[in-house]
Length: 172
Image 1 (tube, rainbow, N blue to C red):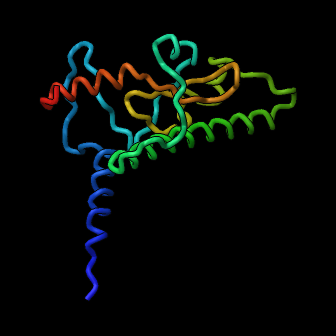
Image 2: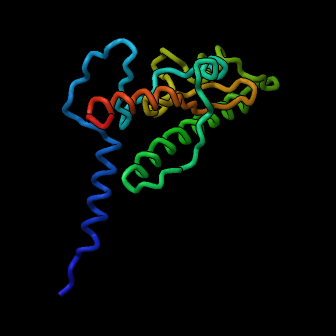
């Protein structure tokens, strides 16, 4: 007789990891108090904006590492998801820039933030670039000096949200 006891913990870990990534589907967003940080849905959602890198850095952001660093098996799936969403977004932008540069009759010139938002991201247009939504503590930013899209992480937002959750759940 063959038993499958080894697959039960793995299956539970995968279900728990997916639950962390997906969040609660049925809950309605509550109005947040001033200064309160709220999480946002990411799975199947699209980013609506790209920040200018100097502005993002001035607001306390740091360029995010695009490696999967989670050691906890329950959070590893979520870390892999957010890392891959950011990487795919950066690759899509680089591809769009390569197409723009290849189709230019003149020598391609560097993109300013405003040119990037108009020509590549196409903010507010029907064919706006579909970048995947990042977690609440990360945003996309245009690095004009290096001519590439980067992911910026806001550690203060992440810490504030953790404090809120600790207080809310009595872990304080």
